Length: 395
Image (tube, rainbow, N blue to C red; front, side, top):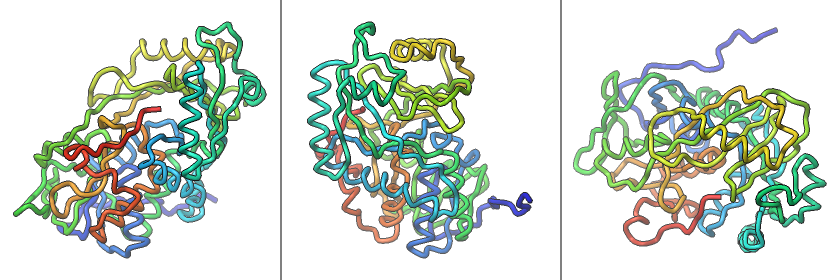
């Protein structure tokens, strides 16, 4: 029989809380869950101006991986990737975790050399990385064209066997349900329109339904972080850029791995349903508007078809876009904001989904203890003012 009890019970916010989290996406909900579960914080509110997951949490491509470059980021992403494995049991919700493996194609000897160098750093951090020859790639992905017919033939690849997918909606509902079960107030339709700051300390949030006071305020608003910065009067070096994604009709299973071409800015994977998710690079301009364009769709399809010619019959049935808040060094901003009592978890670009478990864990730790955890000490806002930026790149 179907369950009759509601999975979630949304609430109107009360007048005061121990912690207010602005942003009802995965990062906000995970921080609320870890605060309640592991730090026994009792009075927590998550404020979401639309509905939970209406931003980037519901508009991504489900990829989880740890094959980053900078030594500052590798331990963090490694831990986050490992945390996904046990979350279904912990949250009592099937997150549909598939560690199917990620194949990143190389189209030149220089790209292969760069992947080897990155692989050395990744292996030293304990991340599993292998290099593949074109023949090994063909055995793993028979549908991939590795011939000289393509404009940029495949000459090798980096294989990240622990990479894969987690269903983003399942993750969102899992964290929301678990947080709600622990007494967290999830408040939809409540928009932050300003903040109360007295003598350098944040004391509350101004919303469309009134003012709410709190001992601590945490910001996890994804692509809208620069708008929050303007409300606070904080200098914040971030730009917001849309990223478009498409999906095809259902087809018989043929692709067992997540396949990407960093050089040509495309990636694809076949979901459990059978459709293909097709994605690419960030749009070339800034915007806070979600949209889809024929130019992006046609370019991405043409590029992927060159390497998967058998997909010529497939139809694109849906497309969407999400907003990515990006810093100049492709690393996030976590921890202090420069305002006492107000913490940040923003500027993830398009790496936010995969970082969810560790981001929530360490955000909660910082909120409670007031000391920046070792795993996120390089992600501080002050790095843009003291020449200590993270040496990361977008791949």
